[in-house]
Image 1 (cartoon, rainbow, N blue to C red):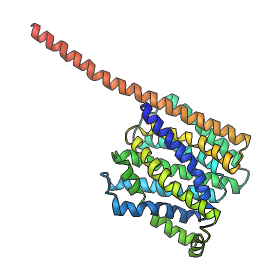
Image 2 (cartoon, helix red, strand yellow):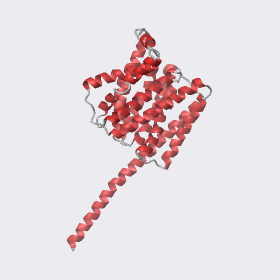
Image 3 (cartoon, helix red, strand yellow):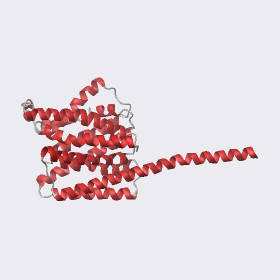
Image 4 (tube, rainbow, N blue to C red):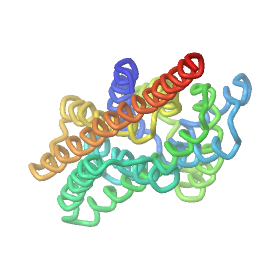
Length: 320
């Protein structure tokens, strides 16, 4: 993974870290399931009208939309509406990194070095610590589990994205947004009800309503179109296990922003767990990147050696 790609991955982490503030603002006005439907409807309509379908298999668009779009945000928004703090959600959601590596091993046969697996185990231990801190009551543990489910959905989306081999990341991002709106709208009407959905459109000119709209715009334009587009581009050009761990920079931004703007605090145990998660997944990412460089160097060296052998053979034939 080149230095330029690393910088792009880090920039996406900043966009997505601030996105948790935007989601928190929007949830103050809109019910969670309807907010997911609304978010992706704002992307799906222009995608269907103006964006040509990307040149990838339909199953990968559906898989990416179901995993990255529907499952991730269904559970994330549900978790945050149920009381998951924005900063802590930005941390727990990054379990998608280890999940992606494990799914890549299972379904894509991607290699994982022993040292990389050690760091992944450290990250999982950190998540266990955070979960244990949340286990004091169902009210706090359930949102933790819901956020983990969202992370697994993100990992499924990463694998489908990787398998699509798309060279048109923006088109892929727009078209995967066509998948979530109708299922989420049906779920919203069934669970949240038409009255609650309709009431969410009142008071949009109040400070809370304006912040909710600003958060929605940020989520759609910056976090989804720009951030997810860059992420898709990186995933299509690098091993999934190398790119995914960069998402661990998201909680650094998310928890810092939540502390500054929302006044959120975390316990000492949660802070220790967060440190383990960040160290573990970033360490795994660095090990994966090193392994990819070694493999690439080996692949370059083999043709060069073969070329030299062919040259020696040709010289021998000419000499004889």
